[in-house]
Image 1 (tube, one colour):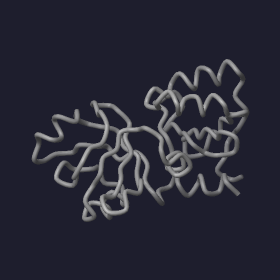
Image 2 (cartoon, one colour):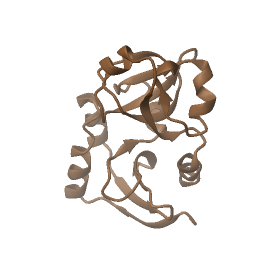
Image 3 (spheres, helix red, strand yellow):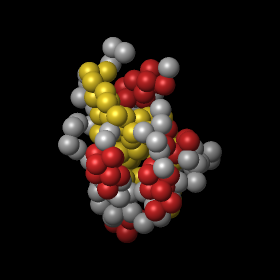
Image 4 (tube, helix red, strand yellow):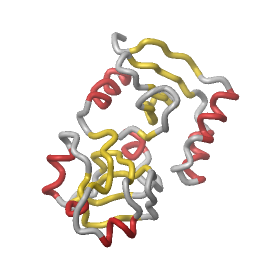
Length: 171
């Protein structure tokens, strides 16, 4: 594959270390990850690292050594996964799908506890579908009290560069 620099299966020790980094997941979700027979490390030419769990690209890092994030495939495959969600109005969707961060006025609801630095799913209010992954720039209370400002950093969204590369990894 032209996007892949290197890939290998994580050892048991590396797998345990990787799972310890998934603090944003509930215990039930962590049990699912622990149950995967193999977790593969894939370094991409663009610098991202993708983790393929039993052939499914469920996690990534922007750079080696940085924080682990879920890909959009995680909430697609495990619909009941417990990760805090930010629900946006329909008008915000087109901007977020072009890479914009989530602004306070575009947020209609927050589900779950959300602290600054937490990973969250970004959902559209009508269909409730996840269309982006973000990182909170404010606490839930700050977002609810604010009238303006950036609330969520857009990390990964539907049809971005990572999404397109991940689709090639599925073939």
